[in-house]
Image 1 (cartoon, rainbow, N blue to C red):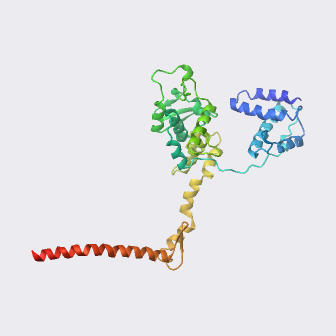
Image 2: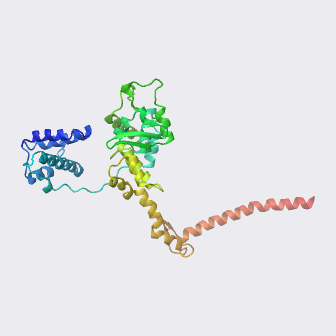
Image 3: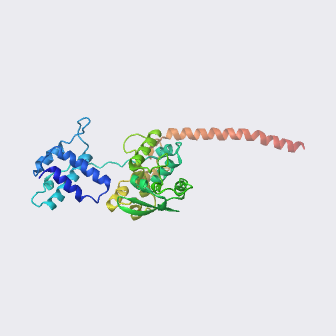
Length: 343
């Protein structure tokens, strides 16, 4: 079977997917078709192709995450073609995917957020990054936001998992409504976030460009300085808060699978740090050290060293200050007694 013909049949079956998903499928399958004019049925040939994936610009091996995306594309592709043509075998169960190692999700540190919000932001950009941080919205959901989707305290987001209503803070609602024009917007500009000329709605790519530019201005560089970094920051901080309800977090973030929500809870540095402070054995050691280890030995508490010499020096400083204070008070006291006696 010709690979190009199989790809076209597969893309027809994916007509209901999001445009971005369709583009990703087609892009990966085009790479595949460049190596195979006819659809390969040998799993070893596909395995060799996956193992040899390199970047076009410099010939270096692709990241395992990128290769795994192409592997998943081929797995879905062959499964669908086998349904259409039962005589065409599905070799993908015998193909080994690349090993993926867990990575820490990129989030913004408190200092980075302060630098971002300290920039001279336009009302549109400030409202946009505030919305990102407040509800962890996806970039496409922000691009799709219209004025009909906003009511006090809530916003309706339209994204990859359908529609969902999320709560928004009062400050976020105030910043968003400040963007609304006095004249009712034309049907073509019902979106909340428009270009600088306020003529066309911002696209997914436009929002990514704005966020990356703001990150560069704030000195934030490196991996995942993007709208999705706001999403990870929201999920991480929400999950670390006391009283976090995981099901509510799932609803706000729009996760179809609860396992995705659990990632923010199980792999959460802030939750681990707070739990560590409560449970570390050093906490008991520090309590036992009160009055028992203040000798010539060193007392270790939360990574700080205190020695008997330092304690004696601190006590000497306090003693000198007390003596100085008493020396200042005594002449004043004597002068008062003398004046009384004279009178």
